[in-house]
Amino acid sequence: MASAAARKKTSAGMSDKTSDIILAAICAIVLIIVAYPLYYVLVASVSDPYDVYAGKTFLLPSGFSLDGYKAVFADPKIMPGFFNSVKYTVVGTCFSVIMLYITAYPLAQKDLPGRKFLSLFFVFTMYFGGGMIPTYLIVKQTGLIGNMWSLFLPGGVAVGNMIIVRNYFQNSIPHDLVEASEIDGCSKFRTFISVVIPLPMPILAVQAVFAMVAYWNDWFTAIIYLGGKGEPLPLVLRGILMKSSAATEQASMISGGYAELNKQTELIKFCSMIVAAVPMLIAYPYVQKYFEKGFMAGAAPSST
Image (cartoon, rainbow, N blue to C red; front, side):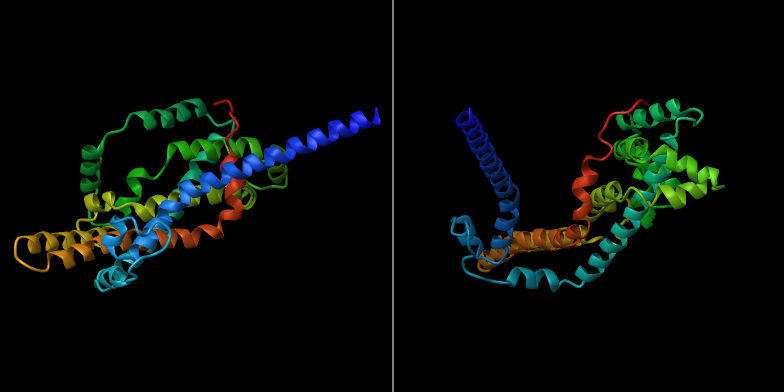
């Protein structure tokens, strides 16, 4: 009996060890698939473009050069574009998180009049929208063309994220805690400010990361609504790349200089990707400790 129990324990131990090895291998494969493209772009940004296309930069740089970064940072618009992106990202993230809170928390209250209708109305807007042209006309008629608020107001509430936050409020914040604060004399607004807001840091971090990445990478909305004023960093990098590409095309029509300009254009392309990605990679570790917990928060289904 003792030997049989020992064999079962050993078998179970081997099984656990094997499963750990398999999970570690899967995680390593996923990490490589996700991280290698960024690493490849980083290596290519400091390598000779011809060596890149020849396959000589699979792991290490070849023909090390910083000419691409020099060309990017030599543009006078790069720093204003960077600060514009920081401003739009910070303001837009705060605005989006505030809008999520003030829409999700009331919908999480079961005694809210018209709660089901309002929830269905928000869900309806996920599938049926006015489209780009009607939205542009509304923004134009309100005088927001060229104003940074035109980047935030048309999509101020992400309905999918709002539903996640609403579920988090319903499932993760004890109702007894809210009742206790109201018994102590707090109004609903004071309860919201003093009790509700400080609690959901994990879900706040997740929604903030989603909003930060969206606003930082957004260049199409800036093209439509800003009208060339206060261009964000992605739009500035796009302009640098387009100017370099245009110069390369012009050089191809005359003798000489084409190869060097084409080389610089390829370098600028890779360097622009790195310059655009690095700020978000730096910001992410500060909210990473909340991200894993908050990513699954609010996922539990709840009745509307």
